[in-house]
Length: 542
Image 1: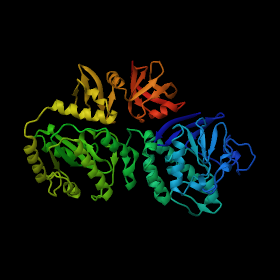
Image 2: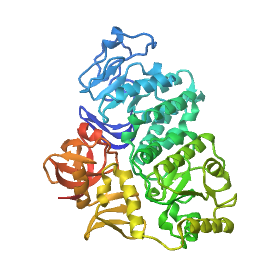
Image 3: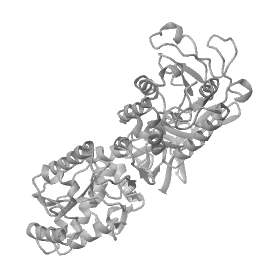
Image 4: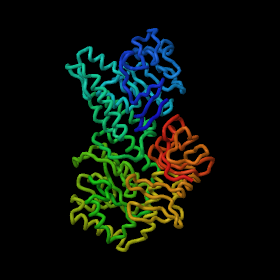
């Protein structure tokens, strides 16, 4: 029996219970019958020893066919060579794993072919490949169970392993180093930092960098298990540009987001302090705009690795969570990403004018766009730059403040669309937005439909808000007919909206009737296929 307690993408932490033994995942099994308890590994593919984990072997990639497909199938565990995974199995052994490690294209293809055909909570075992330097990557790629065989093989050659690379030395420490790395990987998954750990490890070998890049191209495979909320993230490498949580933000901006109806697009720089509105730079800039009709101005912050962050989305993960090294120099791929984001924003918005209030190191933006540059090479908080910004906005939008209620409602509508997709506008129908930024409340005739929670940057639903989304048929989790309290477990889920990610707000219903609202713990596809574990943490129930 498998129960997953923490997840980030394909990486999972949890337990596997078999024959009365509970194994913590991810797991490293020891070599030899006396060291793995009930899990025995045969020493040869052709051994007749009775095993629980089937014997396996490594063969050249060009060999295949009936020989490798004939072996390795049991009631609980299947060794997968080129055959289709059996959906009823709990653990899938990559039968030729040692041949694939070091060949990133083949390894990523193999994992992709297995993972896309099995339930998200099912386990994958790669024998004979785990080392301290590659363990984090392999777990991130979706492998859950390993062994000490590679460490012992390298020890027989006198190699001392570390989480960087191996050197001649003391081989007796290899297994200890592997298990120390295992403990770190488990913590990284629990605290949502596995991606940073992987990025810090892959530079040890070129094939690992290639494997991470190739896996990032499989966004649809990795993204469902990546939460939509979380703690700080450090985007410290070029590879951070393709993190699935950052790519998801950009995709939603392109596919779901519709800019508010504003006359002027104002392009602003990012800040080291997050969220941006708390930074000294942004407070000074916004203070300089107070004498103008700022309700007709759409503020968009340009940054790497996010691209473009509209002011109304600055709290949404990971916009308020990321931190980057600042060199005041831009790589060409960063420039391209930001320029494309601005072009997309302009194409979707109905702006009459664009104003650039960006520092000198972002001069590629006003050079690319037909816009008015207010900094002229000065720092955005310099007196001259602020004066030119104020003068230009006075010309474009005037002195007197416009309809603030309309401004707030448009901003929250944009957030609702970004969070829930098409149909979410209904949350704001007939409503007004009250409260002080950022803790706005969506109110309709004295009833609250939802509230922006600043720590998560998302709209938290009430029962009234849940009724609206339930009627729209979005972010639904269909459950059995019971009163949901505390936690709804996967066993009680009958169906789930496929675009739900861990951390998403969702509505619980039974045959069209609302039963409650809460926060998803699993993705929608995992809810439908998992046998154990919490699926939704219930906030309100009917």
